[in-house]
Amino acid sequence: MNGKTDVLIIGAGIAGLTAARDLSLMGLKVTILEARDRIGGRILTHHTPEFPVELGAEFVHGRHPDLWRLIQEAKMPLAELEGVSWYQERGTWARADDLMPDFMAVFGGMPDKGPDQSFQQYLETVDASEEAKDHALRFVEGFHAADPRKVSVHWLVRSNEAEEEIEGDRQYRTATGYDTLVTFIADQLPKENCELRLHTAVTGVHWTPGNVTLKTTAGEFAARRVLITVPIALLKSGAIRFFPELLQKQKALACMEMGPVVRVPLCFRTKFWEDRFKGLSFAFTDDEQFPTWWASHPLSFPMLTGWAAGGYARKLSGLAHDQVIECALQSLERIFGMSGQELRQHFAAGYMHDWQADPFSQGAYSYAAVGGSDAPGELGAPVSGTLFFAGEATDPGGHNGTVHGAIASGKRAAREISG
Image (tube, rainbow, N blue to C red; front, side, top):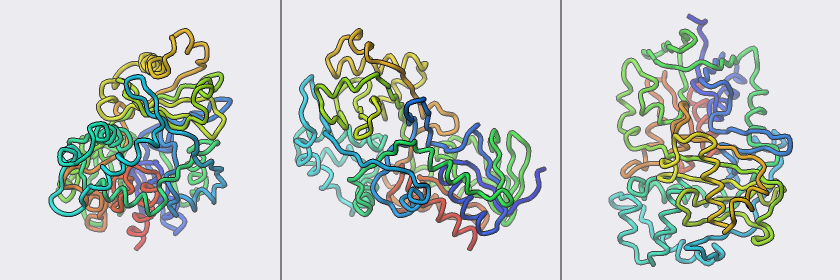
């Protein structure tokens, strides 16, 4: 058995790294166990010789103080999103601004009191056009990666309110890659107090109050406390078993879901789309495979990212890399009305990540099902002063599915452990 430490942290994503930094700087001995061969979790940046390609988190949503403080410390340059969003339906293009009044009316009417319901159930009662309802459905499935038949309306209201509190309508991206933040935090971990072990997948958590032994693929580790930061899909799947079982968390886990996403950044030699769509930011379409696309605007990178979430992702999940790239290219051919030969004259390289097929993620990010609007807070609550929980799924304030939600949860867990 490896030497005893004060705190074991399962997962070297942004939540685990944030907590490790805070705890080790307080003087506690910390060991981080990461199953992957890298740190960062669902922040995954591939660096080409010309520019970074984000395969995981990309946008800075709003101005959450915990995240902005880190960005400023790391001197990470940000560019605020601007440009024009378009939508396409049955081959016809229009500015997305034209949709906003009806679209906002659908979401503005969601109740936060009374019995909870699914978004699909809520839509059946809304006085709105079928077009507005259809776009609202696509948004929930795309932005939240959520099943409209499952996702909680009360949770959606809380999520919308949380965005408003941090100017969530403003979004940013970085020219240096989101992993700039990951590297910055990791470089601050004091080596005398913090050890990081990669290729170390935890399979079992044996615990009694004040004592924890972790069974891993690299041996056993012991501590007085453990912080669990893995995605909820892993906890729900039984990939990590608890002895005794975590009966205290079963209700919360049953009310939380993980949305599937297949993400495909395509790099081109030029921004050929600018000839027709000057300043293109987002394109929301009715395409059968990749309904959502966005450009790197205002950055100069000639790249379009295809986003397939929910049912769209499930149809693509399991396909080989080249098959998914080909599906994405064909999607752009349909959307832009281009021939395959014409599009491929501009094409340089394609990348993809299927988050549902990723064994250490099993999905993109979390959402609450009907009756589960309080589940994130319940999931994040400590057990017997021994088991602690962090990660975007445990944020009780509506910031699930975001980097800032994960960072805030790591800082909250560090305070709980040190207190």
